[in-house]
Amino acid sequence: MKRLPVVAIIGQPNVGKSTLFNRLTKTRAAIVDDHPGVTRDRHLARMDWNGVEFRLMDTGGYVPDSKELFDLAIREQVDLALAEADVLLLLCNVQTGVTRTDEMMARIIRGTGKPFLLVVNKVDNQKLELETPEFWTLGLDEPMGVAANSGRHTGDLLDRIIELLPEMPSQIADQGLRVAIIGRPNVGKSSLVNRLLGDNRVLVTPVAGTTRDAIDTPVTVDGRKYVLVDTAGLRRRTKIRENIEFYSRLRTLSAIETAQVCMLLVEPAEGLTRQDIQVLEEAVTQRKGVALVVNKWDTVPEKETNTARKMQEEMLRNIHTLRWVPVLFISALTGQRAPRVLEMAERIAANRAQWLDPEELRSKMLGAIERRPPPAREGNWIRFRDVIQVRNDPPWIVFRCNHPEMLTTVYHRYLENQLRRAFDFEGVPIRLDFRRGRFIESESEDQEDTMKGVERPKGPAVFYGEAQGDEDDLDVLPVVNRDRDLDDDDDDDDDWEEIEEVEGDGEEEWDEEVEEDDDWDDDDDDDR
Image 1 (cartoon, rainbow, N blue to C red):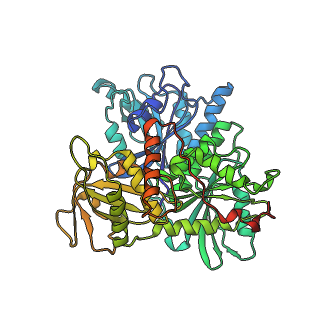
Image 2: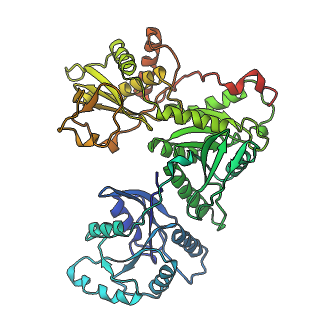
Image 3: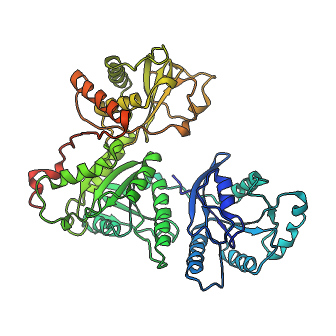
């Protein structure tokens, strides 16, 4: 697991930074306008060029001498970008030539000691190409002419970026389970980490990260090794709130990328905010183990026996397709249930790494399909013939059928619901893949490219066949989690009708009972 390198586009206003960002990312995430200073904050996008991944950052225009509050804010953002980035792109405008701001930015870039590229924008033709040598005076090696509007030479630019990307250090596997403590500022991340480190059972060897990375702290609890990936080291380097939020987001993304399990901390007063949901969805998209940890439980007044249950129901109502995410109520300040954080992370990691018994998986899922077969589409009956787990950590389940393209999202959710009922995948996103093909018992030279490098289960069958869509485009299909008997036909009927209601108009809520948790037993009543 590695942190993705960050490439920052910097330069003075109106040189086309946002246009280049949109061109390279093939999005319109950054607002583009001819008026200088339209990009007031920074945008971040995950990139993949020829199989190499990195993050591209767009910044506001750098105005070195302006006293306007707006320009000061942008300058602070650029300073943060310079600190956060691994590769710097200085973007200039061929139409204006070399400016004093370009010269100042060039001096700053040379002083960072980081890899850099000098890119001259708006070079729309060969005639303008002849004007780029002027930028040699900046002392940043050979200028590269591009045209962000038309895409001219942007592919060559990406090739150059890939050449400059540094090799990011890998995380050491034998250090232990990597648990990311993530969440908004001031939800108690540092308090929780200090609580976990302060117990007399813990042996601590602190390893400080850089100002750019999340801080890794290897610890040993009861003989079990962990690495706490802590984003709590965030310091308020500026009074501009947008900078704090962006910096926090970048640190959080870095923590998620390198972790196996992510513990999202929230406050009971605010509950699950939109920002929290975005962070949670990012972790699920990367198929990390996830859990919600409600901190500051000691601040909730007049708690009753069902207070935690009601709050959990309210939170899960906002993420009804992620109801398999476990919720834990703690107080880092008093220590109430704090040790259960690592216990829960351990359980989620075990669920994420498990290999299912091939025969049991096949029997359970084909039985569920037989009891509730998919509806015919366009006069064609959809027939399933096999199901197999092709990978663990994170789990990847492949179904074989004759018309995978005709399966609906409703049926995808039904199958994952049945899968979660039959096996313990609490806190774990599951990848479901529906394909044509053959399950065979020996290796074959006509193996599908998309299956190369996939770890093979110890079961009797391995899947080879025609892929339905690119594997990176397949969505995680989370569903309601109920621990009930698969063989109960009545439960199947209720589940199927409930899923149809959700798919039908998008307004029906999943009326699910939250399972009993040990956190609410009689022994904990005194704690509340």
